[in-house]
Length: 111
Image (tube, rainbow, N blue to C red; front, side, top):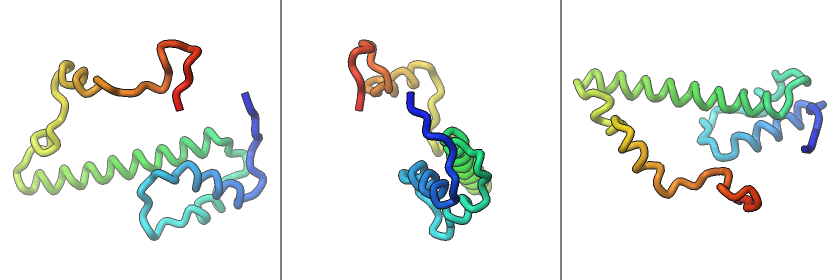
């Protein structure tokens, strides 16, 4: 296990946030540096991960609600529009070919 400690500058915090959100689709007006400038210096990497994950979940929830509201105005049930998974067999069929993060053989590591 590697312990890195907490970031001592907002610049370092910004780089952590930037790395954690590198695969996120961010709004062009979003300024990650200004967010880092508001973070206390006792945030760990796990805290930054939680901050970024919660922000993404909130954005996804807000967007899903907006889509549902628009569909509702048109009289279209959201579950019909999104073709949601309704049965365990559908869920099982979607997991075929899914690559897990851990191998059944603990001596083999995934990339």
